[in-house]
Image (tube, rainbow, N blue to C red):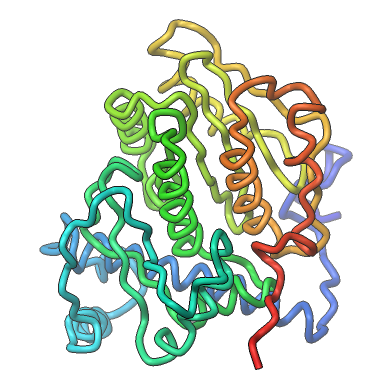
Length: 336
């Protein structure tokens, strides 16, 4: 114990403690994968806000540890021919995000098989997709970029999923909701906009409040990333309830609860009730959380679950999800 910890009888977190992290290939891969994901999300945020967004006249090099020359090169790369795009005509809301073709005929309701058929195209260039305004309640100023590496993350099923994949999954599941005729029942919240990193408390609350007031959905499915861990909130505004799914079995943090209370509870004059499933999936590896969030969302929508959240029997299909055996996330068999 260090001198700074003396007198308390207990060591303080982050002081006087040493952690013996094994220098193994698996640990190195996980650390590098985590760093790569955070760096990619950081570049996506810079592109969204400072290259194409409301802050494009600002210079972020004043706030971050890169030079103005590096920033100019980054902007030039985003404005190059390779990155240029033509925004497609707005499609009817009943059209799917990825259109079917003859090669996808047998991939009905199998998004992973659809994604496999896109691999040759993704290897040549990244895929740019715009969400419809009705999906997240936000105008799509910047498209969702899906790269070859992103596709492999989902198909191979052994790496942490980044925000682009979760955004794409919500876009896909929204088409399912529309096809089911339940667009007034289920809604989605954009995960990048509500994460604490890079967003003020006021902006997060304003987005949630505005979107829920305007869309008036019965249930909102909210993927939430805390550091590098994905969790799922199922928000029912009319009942002032939130169902919290976490594959690490963590409780909701107080700052998140306070933020949600300021949106959902304040407008109804009551405390938000947080429900924790009595039985919930528990991840084994560090990367599984994003896949569980994808599976939970799909199962809730496919089973049309709207109530009885605190009863084991009603959600047994959700609780029994195994990402190692679920067709949507396991490695598919390639055609020969």
